[in-house]
Length: 471
Ligand SMILES: [Zn+2]
Image (cartoon, rainbow, N blue to C red; front, top):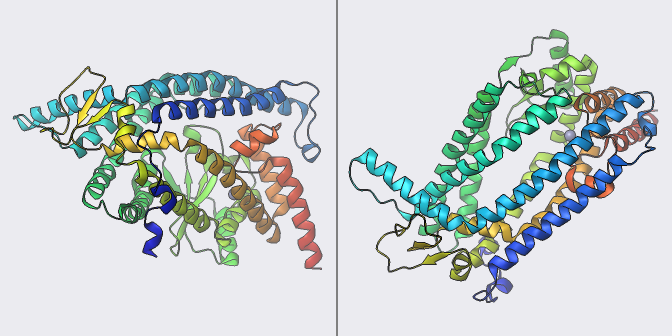
């Protein structure tokens, strides 16, 4: 099996010592931006067009007023995105150009803080420099994003009645997120740096092993620490609903451990339900209080029937396998540029192995002088380079995910819950004000779920098929 983690032979013979990394990356970023704008424009044009009618499958469920409101929400989001996408393109390109400056500042700030704490001159290792760079760039991007995020919550979402957040909660959430990202991100990044330094041979395999360990750790952290920091989990206090969920779990052989309700309504009135738990372990079901408030008991049970369908058909494990293959391919490709001096030089990083300090002290300079390859910078530049493959991956994953949604709907229909699921889906669409009119390319690119009408029609077909079979 180990051979699979070796270098890709064809790619290994490529000579990239003259490759114009910066020009290609800027070109790719702009092309990506134009493509996304084209997709968004198609959707915008559709939402703007007049003479739209409530789709057949929704007649009797959604009136003209709700239909118009959902399209108005879609249109407002679309206009908002037009402005933010352009500003984020400018910020992205500016950040890329300033990587070396940010690096220099992060190193001097880091050295200064650590020297003060230790009460003696302190110089960070190159690996610690990576972490300082990570923390500073995360902090900058959080502050740059704050106005956009504020507008989104307190103007856009507020206008359509979704925002339930207070301003203090918003700022607390932003600070908590920043601290968590820095705390949780720094440790694995530091270990990753050590692995890369120690295991230059076969590093793809070692990093892959490390990433699996990391994913499992993050899963537990998310369940035990992160989610409870943002939401309050309370045991379900509805006996009838609890009994019906237990009966459903028993019928499907679902290893249910606990059922929780979370206060999703504290932040937003969007509804949801999900289950969590590693493969082969007991799982807990989490339901948003908004879903319980807006739907009947049978409808909530039907939604869970759909969720259990995902479990029954191993959709989560399949997604996990795909993401592992994706990760391995990404690492194999990264392997070929990781020590490419030209790539770093294009972004003003000069590698001088003879330098006595990991990073020369050059605050304010647009050139960073380092004594080895800074892997995090390399990883970030490389991620920009593979944007086209991510785009294709996005289409592929959405296609796969939509296939899975149909299968889970079919499973719920087989349990005899097709009609309730339809009602719940319509209710979810209304409360979430999901856009009803959706352009084909837009939904292929952005939607991991089929649009509502497609799902309702499919559930009708599944239900009649199951009825025929059971005679
Ligand atoms: Zn689903």
